[in-house]
Length: 347
Image (cartoon, rainbow, N blue to C red):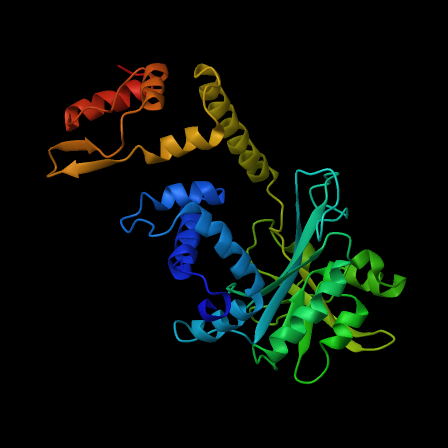
């Protein structure tokens, strides 16, 4: 790529740092450059080099994906006998369409232009290949071009295609019934024929997956961890298939756990907003959270702790609203225990 584009910056260092920052501290490219400046190996490039490198990386996206797949096999054995595929979309804070950013059916139901992404993952959940396409395109049309790339450039010829019902049209299933390919896709019970739907909802005929023994699912306790199934031939206009109905007594039955998850999210937002208010809204979310994450300490021979962060106006403000300080040159263990008690509202 360097020979092709004649750039002088270290594209390997740029891409490496952007990847590390995305894992550790997801943020804008400018913020990622700032985060990389705190790494042990500081950037040998400038911020403007990042933006120039993005143009090259975008242009060579397909080549990079293909080479990454080939080279990843030297690190781990890729489980490419089962491939999962799904699509998602991402909105932009703009009012007018621009390029591939088009008005479409947003999964977040926002009235903004979106761009869509289709992603193949292997049987271990490791990404295999992706493609982007305009927000106004039918997501089912995204599969075939990407699958052709997987078949051609990646050399994956024999695999099982897995997807949800949204990407399981009869044309897609038929396409993945060719050659050495096969498929497992979800099927809406509501869209089955009356006869098949009646059979699917009938509690009779189920077997336990672990030992294939017939089971009366009406007599199974609610906390039973096993999975049960029944199957029958299923024929459409183009294909002879196998329809499998599964049943799990525990599937989505605990509403309290769902409520607990939303409670945690609610309390986290509440705590953050209160802190933000106590600071008189002086700092952006990015600055405040970045500072909180940077407040780290080094343990000194089990005697105490030494702060590893810089004292700044924002850390002074945080200490003031929290009612304790941790920016001393050295903090003994007993002092830290006192600080911990104060942080919990106990003296």
